Image (cartoon, rainbow, N blue to C red; front, side, top):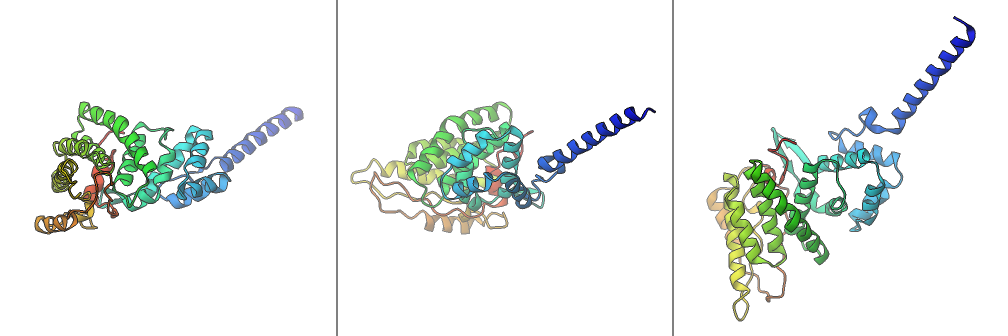
Length: 302
C-alpha cells in the first residue's frame, strides 16, 4: 500500500473515532445516562450538560413555569422527551408489579408539569398522563391558587374530556373512568358542583371495584354541595373526599366500616358562603390501587 494512501486511511479512521468519542460525551442518550430507572442520576447528568436546565427547574419549583417552558420550547425533541421520562420516573414507582404515583411529589412538581402543558413530551399517551396528574394534583392539593385552578380546568375540560371519548372508543373504560374522576375533582375544586356530580356519575360507570367507595363519597359530596349553594341562606359545603380516607399507604383498601367512619368525619360541613371556594385537604401519597386509576397509561398499549 502506498504511504500516502495509508496516511489518508489513518486520518479518516482518526476522524471517525474522534467524532464518535465527541458524540459519546455530548449526547447522554448514547451512553444510556438518561436511563429513567435512576432518575436522580439521569437528571444530574442532563443538568451538567445544559447550564440552563437547573435554573429553569428551580424557577418551576418556586412557582414560575416560564423559564422551564422556554427551555422545553428551545430543546430538541429527544432532549425534551428525556426530561419528561425522567420526571415521570421520579413521580412513578413499581412495587410488586404495580405502578404507583406519589401525589405529594406531583403537587411539589406541579409547576414542572405545567411547563409541559403547551408542549409535547414526544409521546401522546405521556402527554395525557402529565395532563391527568397535573389536573388531579391541583384539584386535590392544599390551597391551589386561582391561577392553578384555572390551568387545571383548562386542561380537564377540553383535553381530558376528548381523551375520555377516545379511551371509550378504544375499549379502555377503566382509564376513561379515571379521567372522569379527575374532571370531577377539578369541577369540585372550582365550585362547579353540578359539573362535578355529572363527572363523578360517569366515573362510577367505569371505575374499578376498589375505587367505587371513594367515587360514591365524592359523588355524594358534590350532590350535597350543589344543593347547599342554591339554598337561602347558603348551606355548608363539604370538602372533597381524599384517597387517604379509603386506602392504606400500602395500597390496600381500608375496611368498609373504617372508610365510612373516616369519610363521615372528613365530610363534615365547612361553614362558608356561596362565593367561597371549598378548601381541598392535603393529598397523601397515592396508594397502589388508587394510583393505577391516576396512571393514564397503566392498561394501554403505549
